[in-house]
Amino acid sequence: MAEKIGIIGVGRMGQPMVKHLIKHGYDVIAHDISAENVAKVREMGAIIAASPHEVGSACQFVILGVGYDDEVNAVVLGEAGLLSALKPGAIIAVCSTVSPDTVKALDEVARAKGVDILDAPICRGRWFADEGKLLALFGGKADVVARGRIVFGTFASDIAHLGEVGHGQVGKAMNNLLLWITSIGLIEAGRIAESTGIDLPTLRDALMMSSGKSQALEDWDQTSFTWALKDMQIVSKMCDAAGLAMPITGAVKELVKEGRRIKATNPPQWTRS
Image (cartoon, rainbow, N blue to C red; front, side):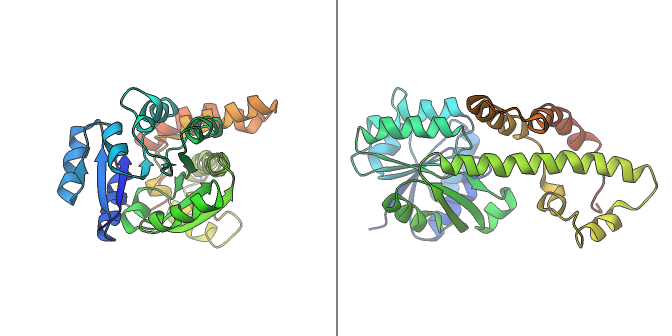
């Protein structure tokens, strides 16, 4: 019989994960508060659950793809939540981008019930999700990571084990910090270059052969800044907890607010439409 994999939160990233899991022979039990998302994964062949508790009752490996820390806590710890149903030996894989402290706190509560947390945020975005080529950053015990590699191998072409629970989220936070520093730089560099009349796509081709090369520049078309402020709030919280003064980080946290508006309305045209 096929192993049942639960997935809670089947939005833009969760849907291709469901597709690849089913393609590789898993039965998928899905839950989402969006009727539209539920309809899409039902068409793919997922079994729909009415609550996180129902997902936990059917599965021993559950992936979380909800958006925010409070949503992760509500799904796991709330009324009709996962922990009220999961049996000892189960794994909750947190793919959501949250604070390292959030997954560490969940791990402490879950271990008391014999359940493990796999800290497993994902990188590379929606186009890579469609192709099954995501990057997963793992934090957790070796045996939990080993089980996670098998499941995540259906939709992630690369997996990096960074350490204990919490370190996956540290890796994601640092990745996102560097992404938004570079993306803000690309807005400013683009504005300066545009003022000279240079052709930006031609300049981009040259920069991609030089020290100005970056993944943010290569993927400029799919950078939306949608989650940028949330990402920077996580990093800012980490700085505060460590008592670190990080002026560039603080400035970028403010700049991404305007960056989202610029990218959505009048961004530098680094690529040809």
